[in-house]
Amino acid sequence: MTDHGDLRAAMRRAAFIGLVSPYFGVKVTYDKSEKIPYNRIKYCAVEARDCGYEPFHRRFYWHGYDMQYGDLPEHWKPDFSGQEAPHPWEIVRVTECYHEGFAHGTKGKGCPMSIFVARNRHKDPSLTEINLTEDVENPVGTYVCTETLPECPLVIGNFLDPAPSEDVPAAEVLSWIPLMRMIVQTLVQIDREVRTSNNTILYDKNAIQDDAIQAVRNVVPGGTVFIGVDADDNTRGVNATMRPVEQSTVLNEYLGALQTYMRLFDDVTGVSPSDRGMATNPRKSATEAAAITDAASKRNADRLEIMAAMWTKIAQIGFKYQRQIFGKQVDIPLDNGVIRTIPVPDPAVACFSFDVDPVELGHLSNAGDIQALMQWLTVTTNAQQAFQGGIPRMTREALRRLGNAMGIEDADIFLDAPTIELGPEERYIRFLQTQEPIMVFEDDQHDMYVAYYAKMQEAAVNRNADEFEIMALRQALDMHRMYAARRQEVINPAAMGGIIPGVGAGPGEVDNNMLAALATGQTPQAMPQGGIGETTY
Image (cartoon, rainbow, N blue to C red; front, side):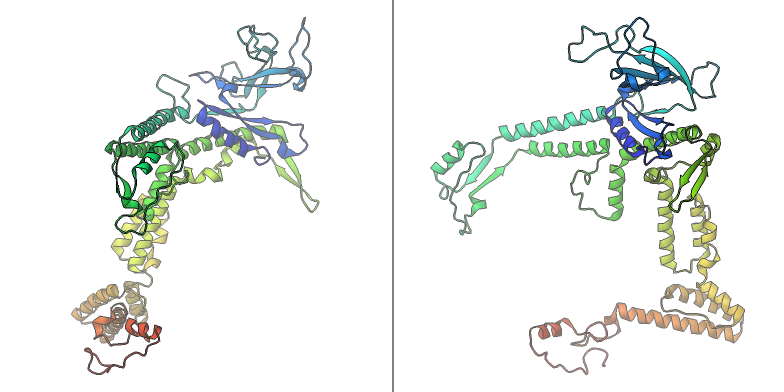
């Protein structure tokens, strides 16, 4: 229904109207006579001139629109007794007034809607333009009837909050005007400074003659002047022949002020330099880039939150209307010829059971949760990388408390004992239970394992433990130290012995001198290997 009811186009139009108007409206209309069910509901955006509300009290809303007299329902046509009835093609003004807030005895049972129809026949002498007519006797029109709707079909919202003691806010574009004026004034000052300041230009009088300088002065704006300069002369080239020496320092201040105003204008309008096609580099890190993006989209986030709230209200209105439009069930034909019957839920049940969260705007409404999850992911990933599964109890408990404080309700499940399943403590406990050798892997964080097993070995010796337990700890220590030494050899091979001529750092590699000789087709010089360096291979 939302796809075929033009909801996306209505919200897009409402987003534009909200910038240039004090407020805007979105209306839900329906037509029971449509044969296809999904065409029975339509959505449209309403400008501020065609809708409104009672200031401060908000007891009623109204929506006015033009339509042909022949398209009016029969019970909406006023009685033109004593007057000529309008032609079917004549345009009349219809005003719908939704006064659900009045205490008239039916409050809570629906939304009464009063219909007024105005026939624009009287010409106002003060209106001199063509086709501008106004009913000076009754501007709203003639009252026709009152109907009861399930819910007020009009939702009105605004992007800016009203001022104190005011109920109608200003248009958002009005907040852009001061900065726009400052930017224009700064540009005017820059242009004036460039045109009025005296530029001192030094030139080589032997390279440019007086008649050439006079030609430069006399040329019309946009004209072309050719001056011959010896470009092969290193001491007197094009750049050294004619160059500006001093520019006004005030011009640099104007340019700096212009950049400041442009940044402020971006913050107010919610447009980032990337949206304007400008490069924002250099950026020092991804964190700084994310901060720039978040700051640039601050206004857009506020606008989208307002649009999401209006979308929620529109969905609730649809829940109130759906049984009157579709009945208690909808029959949908499938491709295989089977008709599927979908029950239409009760309006009260639907409002409680359905959570309206638009997909395009959901990430903004959940911005806080997403930020907390990203921080939690960063913290846990760093901890896992630092301890490689062997997280100590104190660190694990701190992570658990941090997760609970950040709103991660199931943090206890993820930070339970399985996170240290392959840690030194768990391996030692498994050895004591099963008498199997302590497992050692090459990709372990060997410094942590060596420190833990050394303490356990010292404690075993002090309590006169079994020799088998001490031997198992000693074997695990030896293997971890061996792996640590091997890793150190790969990281810093020069520390293990002298440099061998012709041999690179990696196994089977040659040094840069030999590679250069081979690349030029030369034969590398033979050098004795024995006695060079501290180690002989």
